[in-house]
Length: 274
Length: 274
Image (cartoon, rainbow over all chains, first blue to last red; front, side, top):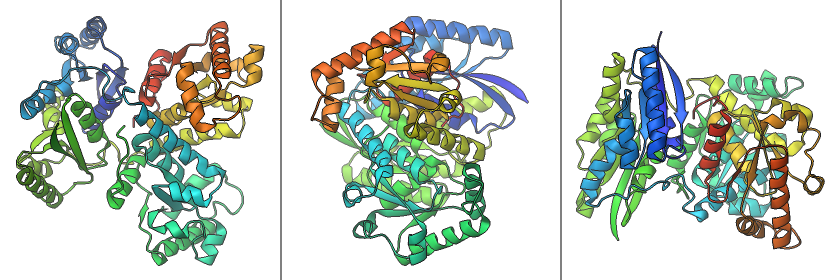
C-alpha cells in the first residue's frame, strides 16, 4: 500500500480542517495516510516554519505531502501556498466566491469560529453538558420539563454519549431516561415522563450488538444474556410503538449520525453551532 | 443588516459541512445568515427536492441562497449544482486535485467519515466517554494509571467539558482531578496522582470569570466570594509551578481551543478522528 503524509494546518484549533481532511481522505482506498496536525498557525513566522517542515518531508519521501489547510489571513496562507505540498485551503477556495456573491470584503480575522467571542455560547454548551450529566442524579419532573429532548432506551443503547454530544455540539438540553425492568414489564411510561412524552425519542439496537457491548461491561449475571437482551429490546420497541414514540436503531450508526438523525426528524433547533 | 439564507446540505450528518459553513460565514460582518441544515441527502430524488426548495427561496427572496454542500456522489451533487443557489461543495473543490495527485480514482462512496464503518472506533469513543464520566465515581490509582491525560484545576475551571470533548472527539482517556481545599492548603499533590504527575495538565481561569460561573451555580456561601476564588486560583497556580505542571488559562477559550492546545502541547496522539 502506498503511503502519503498529510498535514492538517490551521490558524485555530484545526477541528474543522481535521474533519474535512478525514472526509476527503477516507474516499481514497489503497493509500495509507500519515497525519500530522498543526494548529494555531497564526503568524507568518509560524507558517514559514510549517512550510519548511513540509518541504523537508517532500524531499525525504520524494513525493509531496498533502496539506489540508484552514488559514484565514492572506499573508499567513501565502507562506503555505508557496510550499512544496499540494495545498487545499478552504478559505482560499470559498472566500473569494462568497465575497463576490455577498458583495462585501470579508474581515479575514482570526478566531471567529471556535474562539470564545461569544461567552453566552460557551455558557450554553456548558449548561447543556451539565444538564446531560445531571441526569444521573435523579429524574425529577423539573428535569424533564427543562429538557429539549428526552432520549429513552435500555441500558447501553447509546443514550448518554448522544446526550453529551448534543450538548457539546449544539447546546441542546437532552435528558435521558433509562428504561428499567419495571417499565418494560408494565409496558407503561413512568409518571414523570408522561406529561412530556412529545419530547421523547427512542433508541434501539440489535440484540447481538447490545450483548457485545454489555459483555464488555459486565459479563456476569443476567445483564448480557441473549434472553435478557432480547426481552428488553422487544419490550422497549413495543413501548415506543404503543406511545407513538419515534425511535431509531443505533446499531450501525456513529454518535454524529444518531444526533443528526434525531435533530433532522424532530426539527429541534440547534442552540449553538460548534 | 442584509439577510441571506444558507443551506447546509450533506449526504451524511452535515456535521463537517456545518463547521465549514460556520467558519466561512463568521468572516462576513453585516450579513445576517438564516441557516437551514439538510442532512442525509443521499439520493438523486432527495437532491432534486432540496434543489427545488433552494430555487423557491431564491425566487421568494429575490437573491440566491448560499449552499454549503458536502455530497460525495457525482449524480447527487449534479442535481444540486444546477440549482439557483451559489453552491460551494468541498468534494467538488478538492476531490479532483486529490485524484490527480494520488493518481487514483476516489471511491465516491458514502459514509466513510461519520459512518460506523469502524466499530472499534465507536467503541473507543464510548469507552473514553465512560472513562471521563467515571471520574465522578472516585479516583483510584487504577483510574489515573489508565488515563492518557489528567486534567487538574479548581471547581468550574473547565475540566469536565474538556474531558468529555477529548473523549467524544478524539477517543482520549482524560481523567480529571478537582483540586480540593486540602490540596490547595497543603500545596501538595495527592498520593494517587503523584506517580502519574507527568500526565497532569493544569487549567486555570481568571478570578472574575470563575466568580461569574460559580455565581450561577451556587451564589450562596463562600464558594463564589472574591476572596475564595482568588485564594483557590493563586494556590492552584502555585501548585502547578512547584510541580512543573504545564497549564493554560481557559478564560477566553472555547472547549475546542482548550482541547486542541493541550493536544498540541503534550504531543498526545489522537486515538480516533471524529
